[in-house]
Length: 323
Image (cartoon, rainbow, N blue to C red; front, side):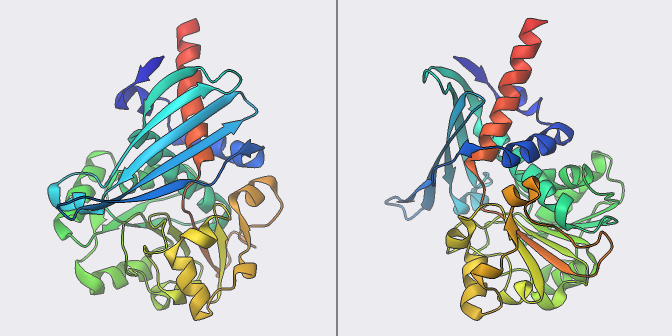
């Protein structure tokens, strides 16, 4: 059984490879049972959740991710999410590898965000706004730049110092114009109004983005909230917009969608399609590359994405070993 640490897991997961791999995986067939979710609360009052996410495919691989989510970790200077991934031979059940689940989760989530945008964002989308400063948020410019001509990158966070630090990190990586939005709700509103793509990767439990702020032709990408208690966008974000989801599970798990359905700004049957339907050509994305229609992509994550990323890591290692 091989062990892939963070660096070894990260190396094969460039978005130029991972985004197309996800597109192929969603277009193909795989078995993805519903995730198991368990609430955790210890004697000190710390609250978290444990998710167990299995998937297997005809390619002969079976994978199981265990992911621990503790939103209070931010106050401790720790990431809110920690995960491990075990890859097996699906024909025999033999364990093949233990991988860094944090790297898999961050890369596959950012790649799925970009995959959604490849169908739904305007073809000339250049201005990206990122909400959040965590592991996934850090990767979103590179992910979206693999599918759209991103030139301007802005970050907003409820802790302004975190936004400033991430903007500086992006500038060091070559995003010369990366900047932090002005702090507070006023700064967020101004940044949203100017963005072509608004990508939310937070653990928020109250809406951050308001529908009235979104510009015509903009694409709203919601990838942070994954439980009924979490939400990043208010109900008006879904009014007069074409909404897509990563998997049908989003309609029962995402607080954003549940709020919009309850408010009447979204009907479940009016959701335009899933990532699988988009990748198979069973539904259309943006009607025209330059249209002023608003689009929304709501994701709660899929074990298929983890399996796809883990398979890339395993196959890259096997190819290298055969040289």
